[in-house]
Image (cartoon, helix red, strand yellow):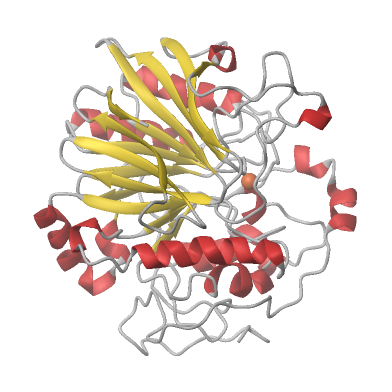
Length: 446
Ligand SMILES: [Fe+2]
């Protein structure tokens, strides 16, 4: 049942952290807390959606600190990591934009995605079982309200048997005027995803999943064979903002610039040989036709420039960049030369975790043709701050709901895209890119 009033479970009650219910519970058939239409609110905040950014606290860790996956697992963490090492690979899920805005048809999509993710964790082959879910943000729509965490997060994922680790999206951070201080969405997000000890959140209702222990809204998740550097790209509808941009966004601290630089420097100086992924809610690249506005959320150019500048300074680029926000799947290959020959870097948008799927082009808004797979879209990368040598839209899917399945070994990083629905789990993968960790070139495409 949904929370009627805030409560605090006495802790420890169980062997925290807890990830799922001990009994498999049936799908929810609707929202426990009725969700009223936000259309009037949207009318009132239209301008703020383009101007209101939010501050956030420094991570509990130093800029070069690492949040180990083992910590998310609590006392079982060391054993879990040992199993992963023995298997010689780690598999994990990635989704974005899972929240649903109503308890009807839209909610069924979110529940279907969550169910398929959960089913994928119950395979017979232990080495092929995902170890956690990384959420790229927009967990709760429309404005990250505490009262909707139960319906939009805890209940759909009630049976998911592993940690869910998240960076916030714009819908998890935008503040509606008049919101009480203690109910500011980013604070609510943090009490569910960035706590010091894994207690049951007041927002979890009668469910037992404990809040995740990430050290802040930006952090580097460290695991066997891979590291995910997560950034918070703030509360605007567009674009993504990761810093003050030299004073343009005064409320936004520059903490993440130092953090990103420290993390990449650490990778470089320690000669870390695992996969390095960058995760940020707003996509650096999102499709639009040449000279036209995007049909859905567009590219975040200034944010990418800042990321590029730091990478150029350190002399190192992540193996892949993952984003959500645009409610579809888009996979780009960006060719970059960091001084050691050309690297191929996948930039993947996966924002179809349950919220409305958006088409890439809207014919009724004047856009014309859908792009073919492999289209040269270098015009989206017109002023790169690294030595970029081309951008291709390799594949996309703007009809289905889906998620990523990331598979890392000591040699390669594979990112598969899975759709949810009629095909079932076994046939659900409809795209995949595989990168050699050493050459940083694609060794498997499609
Ligand atoms: Fe978003």
